Image (cartoon, rainbow, N blue to C red; front, side):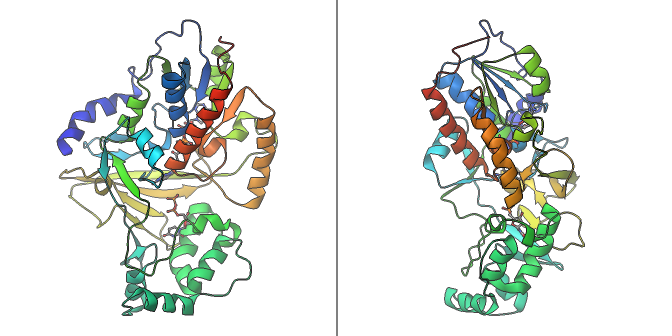
Length: 400
Ligand code: FAD
Ligand code: UDP
């Protein structure tokens, strides 16, 4: 695997340079302008070009394709994810088989430990976590379930992320693993966030310490960027990088636009700005083979400014004498990464969605375009469904 990755280094480092920033010449013009070259925009570009025979212009304001899943070889030659750890997992065979046209895979089951005052314990909470934290000897699922029942509190209506955790594991485990992490990650108390956020993390009575239990869990063998390069390698697709929609639209007035950036930005924040959570990353390389036992260590304490440290070699399987990691800091200003699930934000999004319904020449897709806390597989599924819907209208009747 390492040799294969090394062979790919050149092409991945080249990704933001001319080969992908290509203009093959649009001849009769483009049928569709796609804004954003992440999963949403790239899947739609591929489908429209390869299946629909449409001519597509794909632009992104970043200097690379792949959106938040972009990875690259750093100065030491280690494959890292620029925007934090991306692990592919899904229960949907069709989505996996679609992506498998563009990449081979490496089997990988993600594991995460939480640092609780220097002790590393599995998260999601499982039997090992309970035994390690409380010095217990719970031997089976029944004993662990009984223990959790004794901790859990009765919550009348489960509305917030605080409710969902306290109802499952009680206050002490909530304080230890969820309260500080969530406050750092979202800048909000869990009581102010929709229950769907913390509900992403299950509680287990077994000793299964995998972060995900999906039937398919894998990493693209040569990285995400390489997969995107293959997906977008089609004569009908032109790509403009470092190119913001506000500029591109001046030159290319396309009959149809697919927009995968923030929906409120498209409508110039006419109803006010939708809140997004942003992130900053500190990437470091250490002159050691390993610095932590698993791919990600979470830091739930509010005394520590970052939320998690990712060591990429665990994810990629790369063999290298050095190791590269990223520290993740959440913040309110900067590129939008996460929609913030809470009722007032959803209500504001609905107003933009009404506008979108009345705009037949633009389609919104993706995490930012539809303001949904989606994983990669969900975005791919949404993009494929959008393509099936668009196929029934004929995009490109009015080329420009
Ligand atoms: P994006 O990847 O955000 O792509 C949108 C693109 O649009 C961006 O490249 C942006 O530059 C561009 N754009 C926006 N506005 C404009 C404009 N005006 N002009 C030009 N370009 C524009 N999912 C998983 O399944 N597993 C994981 O382990 C996982 N880990 C994650 C970790 C982090 C830190 C984050 C932030 C997300 C993670 N995700 C994970 C979610 C995953 O990143 C998203 O589901 C997926 O990348 C969304 O794809 P997208 O195309 O909708 O958006
Ligand atoms: N969470 C937490 N402690 C943890 C892990 C997760 O409090 O150790 C909460 C936190 O609110 C987080 C949410 O659960 O934002 C979802 O976690 P996930 O790992 O799915 O977040 P992502 O990978 O999308 O950032």
